[in-house]
Image (cartoon, rainbow, N blue to C red):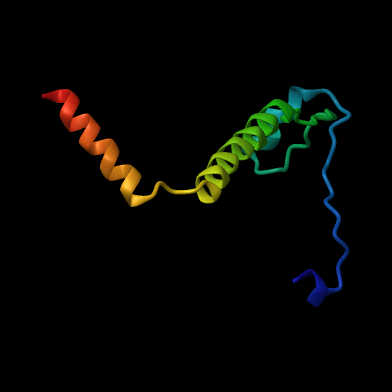
Length: 88
């Protein structure tokens, strides 16, 4: 839509430099109320760290199970026979 209207990718935000006593007056009459001049940059680095290390651990486990050599059928059968003999 921006390309169609040939507009630039900017956001304009009204910043309040006045005292906030007339804010209720503006709200009741439907006049836009400017926001206070506050810069807020979120710090989510810890959350990102847990996410990426969790994904690393999960994919490492999946990779291990995909490359390990499966047991031979004869090894599985002999293990089951030993288990059956020991339970008697």
